[in-house]
Each structure stands twice: as C-alpha cells, then as structure tokens.
Image (cartoon, rainbow, N blue to C red):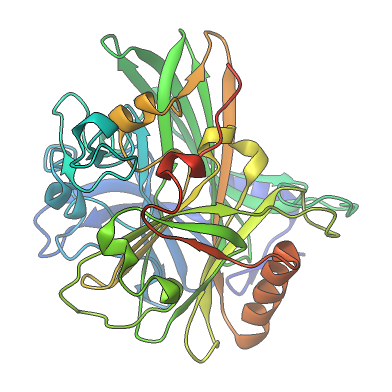
Amino acid sequence: MPEINGKQFTRPEFEAINAIGVRDDVIVSQGGFYNQASYVMTPAKDLDVQISLERALEPMVVRLNGEPGMWENPMGPKTIEEYDGGSVEGVLASIQGFFTAGVSNTGANLLTVAETDAGKNQPQNHTHIPLFPLHGKFSQTSPNADSIQREAIWKKDDLWKTGIEQTEDDLFYRVSGVIPQRNMVLPYDIDVHRTVESKAGEYGFTVIDTLKANRDSGYMWLYHPNFNIGEGDELHAPITKLYARDKDAEVDIENWGKMTGIGDELAERCYITNVKGSDGIEGLEDGTVIVAKVAEDRESGIYVQYNLNDFFEEQRCLHIWKNTQAGVLGIEPGSTFNGRNWAEEHKVLSRLEAGEDKTYRVKVGFMMNKAEVQEKLDLIDKIRGEDTTKIIRIGDEPLHSAYMKRAS
C-alpha cells in the first residue's frame, strides 16, 4: 500500500477520497492584508505547493520544511488589482515563486535596431509601450471558475521518462483549469489549459500547459520560476553559448554561474543562452534539459527540467535573470525576454494557427541531500557531453542570432 505523509492508503481509499493531498487554503500577503483563495498540494512530507485560484493557477508560494522553497516576494503576493505590469519596478514587486509571462509580451521592450545609439543589434536601454505590459497579462488572469478541478489520480509515471517499462500506476495530485487570453488588437485568442501536478512522495511539481488557438494568433510564452540565492550557490546547465543581453550583463560574465555579492548595488544581470538537450541517454526523453542551482556545500538544491522539443525553435533559448541585489535567480525557458517589438523586428514571434495547439511541460524539483544533488549534476554533465560554454560579449555576434527562427 502507498504511504503518503506517514499514512497508508489503498487505491480504492484514494479513489473514494478523490482530493486527498489537495486542500483549500488562502495565500496571505505579508502583514495579512489580503487573502487569495488557493489550493495547496502536499505531495511529500513538509512540501506545500500553494496554487493561486485568482492568478492563472500559478504555484505562487512553495514551502519546504516551513521555509521558502522558491522566492517569496517581500512585497507579498499581489492580487490582480494590485499587480503592476507597467514598469520593471512594478513587475519586480508582483512576481512570486512560479510566474508565467505571456501571451502578449514576455519582457522589457528593448529598443529596436533603428532606435539604438549606434544602430547595432545590441539594444542598450529599455523602453516601455503601454499596449504591451512588461510580462503580459496571463498571470493577471483568473481561470474560468467552472473549469477548476482538483483530483487525485492513478497513472503511469512516464511524463519525463522513455525506455523504462512502467508496470504499476502511481498516485498523482492535480489541479487544473482554463485561463482565457484574448486581444483583438494584436491579435490573439488562446485558451490556456493548465495542469499543476505532483507525484505522491516526490519533492517537486510539474506545470503542463496546452495552448489552444481559437484564431490565428501571434504570441509569446516564457516560464519564469524564481529561486532564492545564497552566497556561494552555483548554477549548472548544459549551456553551449551564453550571450550578454546588455552592458550590465558583461560585468563578471565569466562567473555567470556563481552567486556572489548578494545585496550588492548592481541589481541584475540578464543572459540569453543556447542549451543542449539530452540525446540517447537511458531513461530520459531526447531533448531533456536540466538546470540546477545547488548550495555551496552541495547538500541541497533545486532544479528545473523541461524538453526543448516542447518549444518552437524561436522559443528554445534559456534566459537567466541573476538579481544579486534582491537575492533572486530566474531560470526562464521560452520566448525572448527582450519584448514584443524586438521579437517582431527579428521575426522570433511565435504563431499558432486557428485550431492549432501547443503543449509545454516544466518541472521544478527539490534535491534533499548530497546524493540527489550529485545525481542531477551527473545528468547535466551527460547531457552537455564534451561541449563547453562559449561566452558571447556585446559586439561578438548579433543578439538575435541566439534565437532560431521557426520556418514560416
């Protein structure tokens, strides 16, 4: 019989209970000024994944052993009304642990080539156009109330694995719903079918999004999970090329994977990277990418896992947001965080035709001991193979060359 959180259950008992491991709760802002309705999944001992029912089923708050497992905004979880998408400062005050940018925009609108000082492909400054909120409005949208479901289901644990025979079903907790995205000006009309699920007994969760287009739609889509960083933490990823987005990113660029100077005045460094997916590694789907942040002593860490093949070619860059001043790290696969104007100019805006759909999967996991950390680091080394990380400074290559274009 499966044992969850110290209690044994038979499969019929779980089927009868249906929603065991998913409970009603509220997300309390700092100071308790506002409560957001939420479901909380507790798939493993002392792991709580709090999913906002107001803001796009985002796993906004994640607690591990009572402490933040992902970054918690010191401003507290913002409601839709409180969310400020009109400026860098506003978005910084509004994002939480797991954040999704899109579908109208996925980043600061960088100056286009014609607007830069030297007319080069390396924008030096940010601009903002009110029509395009800084990170879009997806995270400001409530799911359709009648679409929200919570359940406990039995299924094969084959989401991330290949070549391994699954003989028995495993128990999964799941919260799902539909988040509509409409704009008749840009235009786009997309329904996002979101599922957040966790395997019972496992320290982690997976977000599965299927975007279904109701009309021809140009869109952007960027996952923005955020994590606390401590002095000496290290970031490991199978990166083949790492581009500095701007002059600030060139500062100490060789140490892109080192978390040092926490609290320093230099607020952020943003990198655009090309990453390598797995190829022929036993037990992994081809195209799997694993990115890990580990503590200096390598006794614990977090990882983000996804598959390059889930993303259109122009969405396959991994973006790194390293904000040492705030002590936060964003590990961001998906559309460019250079903004919609820049994406349109360089023909890296994604498109879905009417009736077309696209499914994305992103997993956030927690490594609880040195053996688990080493296992993930070994996998990253296997994925990387003999490739090394090439540093691309401003002027070495046009920034848009990091993004592969989808065939039109």
